[in-house]
Length: 398
Image (cartoon, rainbow, N blue to C red; front, side):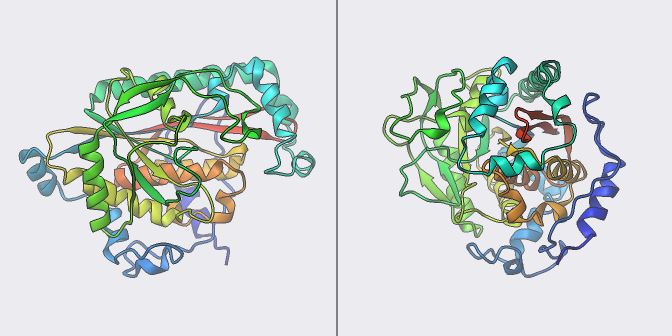
C-alpha cells in the first residue's frame, strides 16, 4: 500500500531544512511517496522491518534510533573508549573525476549500457533537459561539486580523527564467488588504486579486461576492524570479513575516492566497511539504518582512546537521475527522520545501477542519530538527453 505518511513527513522537514544550493533550489514540497513497511520506532518486532535478511534481535532497531544517554557517553570518554567525532557523506564517480568537457562521452556510453533502456528514458526525459546540458550549466555544477568536496576536506581536517570508517559498496573488491551483505576489510595495509582519469568505456569490460591499476599501499586499522566484526556479530549483524582483494585489483573509487579527494592526509588509517548494493544480497533500508546504530555502539565500545570519523561514499541516484527520490532522501537526512529512511522502497532504490548506494547514507544516518545532516550541496549533473547522470550530494553530521 502506498501511504502518504512518508510524504507528509518529508513536507514537514523541507520547511526547516538547511538551505540548498542557490543554483538548484529545492522545492518547498516534494511529491515523494514510499511504501511504509517500517513500523513506528517503538515497535518491538524488528522481524517485520527486514524479513528477507538475517534476523535482527528485537532491540536492534530501537537502539539504533537514539544515542546512549550523556552520562553513558561521558563514562565511556572517561574510560578512554573510542568516540565518533564526525560523519560526512559524499558522492563519488565519473562526474567528479571527469572534466565537464568529457561528460558527453559519458552520456554516449549510456546509450549502449545494457543495464537500462535508453530509448524509454529518452521518451520520459525531463522537460528542461536541454537547459541542463549546456556546457555552462555542467561547468557550474562541476565547480560547485569540488567546492563542496573542499568543505568536506576542511571538516575532516578540523575534526582530527585517528581513523576513518568509509561505508561504501564492494566494487570488484573480492572474487565473484564471494558474497556478503555487510563486510569489513581487516588489513594492516590497504591496496588503493592511484588517482587517474575516468574511462567511460570501463563499464563494458570484464574484470579481467580492465586495465591493471597502479596500486599504492595506504594504512588500515585492523584492530578496529576486528573489534567491529566481533561486536556487530554479537549485536545480531552477521558481518563478513576480508583481509585483502582479488589478485591484480585494488580498492577503486568507492574507497579510493576518500583518499584522493576528501582526506587532507592520505596516511590517515581507513577501515573499509562494505554495504552491498547488489541484488539479491542487498539489505533493506531499515536494516542498514539499524546496522548504523549497531556500528556506533561497536565503535563506542572499542577500548581505545581514538577519535573515529564515518563517511558514506556513493549515491545518490545514478546512472539515471531521480531528483524526486534524491530530494526526499535529503529531507529525511536533514530532519533525522528514521521512519522515512527505513521505509525507502527497494524497487525505487534499484531504479538505476548505482542508486542503492543511498543505503550507505542511511547507515551513517543511523550511526549519527539523533544528530542530523547539514546539506552542503545537491547537484543533479545530467549528461544525456535521456536524463542520465548523477545526483551529486555532499553533507556533514556534526
